[in-house]
Every structure is written in structure tokens, then in C-alpha cells.
Length: 291
Image (cartoon, rainbow, N blue to C red; front, top):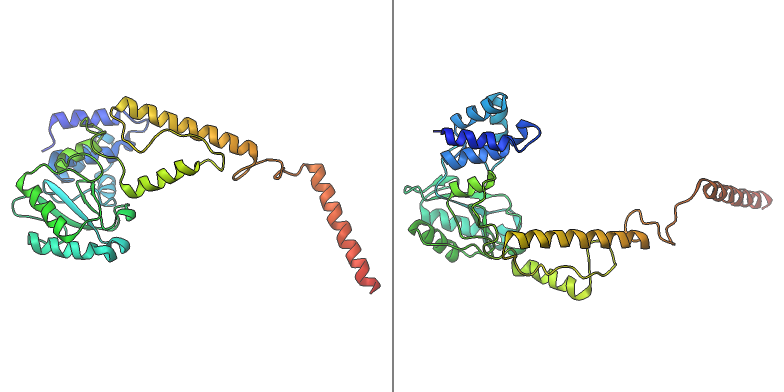
């Protein structure tokens, strides 16, 4: 049941946006945090508060796979079975979990703890095969480790993701996605070894995203300890990138650069070049005629 508290929070979400219907996505996540899925009542309430039709809300809820149309267990376990993860063992992991849990794809265990689903891509191919629990990453998985993971979840043990915070319940995670932070954004590592290896190499060789102008950027190999520190690091990164791109543009590096070797033609110079080309063609034609 959608409570008055949830309705008030939906209005709070709507107030964040210039156009009310832009609030629909986080509102649907809030419905899932309350109901465990996008319920018919949740669709009706969203439509009412946004002054749109229930059909418009349902169209969105059925388009995005993160919105579920039937109840989800405490832990949504998504196994990537897209090409790379599949060949690295994702198919084997999925088959093993089906047998171990006694459920099929998009089904929930009898105790209501685990919902198992194969997903097309977890966007972490450098850590394949990947499993996600309530959108937290578990990298380089194996069938044995996957079985232990779901056993720990069902037993109520505290489980830490490979990259990210301790695993919370599905409803708690959905509330965060609705825009109500749980204060644990900086908990746990933010990147895995495959990503950090490339970052270290870039630092060692002075590579930057703005061109070939080497600049010293902030240290991104460790996670910020506080939200304030994270904000400062992001600001420093943006400043460094902007300075690098400005210098690259002045040096004629990258698209649209206007350095000494890449000066645009002026109208006069273009006409002169055209005359020269026509003159050259005429001379060549004359030579052909003389032959």
C-alpha cells in the first residue's frame, strides 16, 4: 500500500524538476522501495500526482528492466549472460545458481530472500564474469563463489561488494535510487584493479583525456573519505580537464584545433587557393592539348 509518507516523498521528488513528469523515474524507484515492485496502485498514484495517464506511467515501467512488475526478493541477483561474461563462465554460473536455489530465471526462492535473473550486460566487461546483487558489483565470479554468495545472503550474513558498499536489501537500494541517500556513498572501494591499472599507466606517462598536453591530475586511485572530499576531487578533475583542453586547443591539438599547422582558410586565401588550383588545371589541360 502506498502510504501518505510515500506520497509526500513523491511530491518532494517532483519539486526537484522544472517539468513534473521528469520525476517519474525516481518516483517508480520509490514505489519499488515501498511495494517491492511497481504495483498497479503505484502506477495509479504516480499518474495522479503527475497529472498523466496510467498508460503513460505503465509504458515507462515496462520499458526499463530495472522496474519489476512482480515482487522481488530481499536480494536481486543478476547474472550477466551477455557475450563476454557468458564465454568467461556466466552461463555456467547462471545454470549452477538455478540448480542450487531450485528456481528459474526471474523467480524468487520460497523464503523470499533471493530473486535470480539473467541480465544482458552489467557494464563491467573488464571484470567478467560479473554478478550484481541489488546493483552492487561482484567481479571475476566463479560458480562456487556465486553459490556461497547466495547462501550468505539467505543466512543474513553481512556481504561486502567487490566495488561499492555493503549489500543492503532490494527495497533499501531502491530508496537510494529514488534520491534518498543512505549516507554510505563513500563506503567501500570505488574501482577495481583492472581500472586502476590503466589509471596508473596514464599517470606514469602523463596521459590526459584533453590531448597530448601532459598535466598533473588529482590522485583518483583511492576513494574519498568524505562527501566533501569527493566533491573537491571532482572539482579539481573538472578544472584540470578544462585547463588541459584549453592548452590543447591553443596548440592545435584535437578536433577543431587552430594551431600553426591547422589554420583555417580566410575568404581571400580560399579564393587564392582556388585560383591556383584552376590555374594548375588549366596548365595541365594545355599541356595535354599540346601533346
